[in-house]
Amino acid sequence: MILTLTLNPAVDISYKLDRLELDVVNRVASVSKTAGGKGLNVARVLHQLGEEVAASGFLGGSLGSFISAELQVIGINDFFVPIQGETRNCIAILHEGKQTEILESGPIISEVEAGFFLGKFEEYIQQVDLVTISGSLPKGLSVDFYAKLIEISNRYETKVLLDTNGTLLTSTLNSTSKPYLIKPNEEEMAELLGKSTIDEVEIIGALESMLFTDIPWVVVTLGANGAIVKHNKTIYRAALPKVNAINPVGSGDSVVAGFAAGITRGLTDEELIKFGLTMGVLNALEDKTGYINIEKVETVSSQIEVKSTSIH
Image (tube, rainbow, N blue to C red; front, side, top):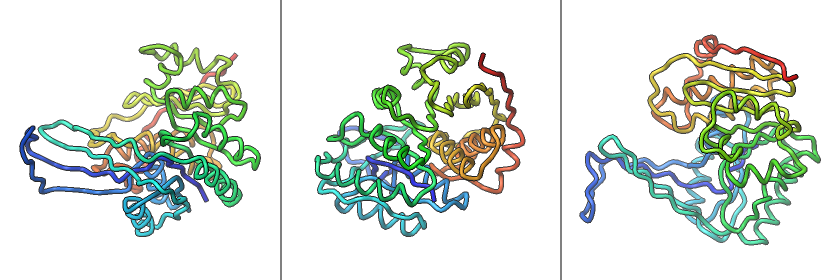
């Protein structure tokens, strides 16, 4: 079983309007509400791939109950822990070809709740084969909370795939407990290296540096331009087929799901890279976030080109 963590989940609410007008009443005919969060996107894709998957994090209040109910309907194991605070809403207003977002910050996690979660996580880690950690931390948790989770995972020799950014990623990389895989995108990689922008030569140079020596897999996604991937002493350059993307939101989460499933299935390096990136492409072809058409896996995977070079 694969465990996905979304420590600050949300109910994602989407409002579709022909036109958004300020300071007046806007009536919405089309509304969708789903269990949201990067790790829940990962869980959905894993479930569609036929993997047994559990989702965990913090849930509270009626919105937390909504997410638990949706997981039950989908068929994803609910490993979330309860909190006193209320799970947040994240609202997206789609209007005139634009997307305006209103994002709540979410609940504040108490020290007692954080300690309880760490204890439950140590129980969970002994029941699963692999863990994915995605997204931001809710308020109240220390910046080294992910490092604590990775330390527990490493104690039980359970691989961790980490997808986060900014100070969280930097803090985790500077800790003694390293994840098995990280998946920064181009912007996050630039931020990690203290640059405003970064090109492919700089990315490869960074991957060959000491910064990532102790992390077996580093997957730098480049959107439609594919990815640059490091596995131990080898650098891979992957090129994607050209597609007409419908909704690229969640494609990074889908890539994480693909790598998680591929690692548990024991795929070779090239097979794993193709399989992981295929999930990102398939997500972009769907209207819903965190959804793929598994019937297209082989077609897309066969069109991904992967070339390798050794790190000297």
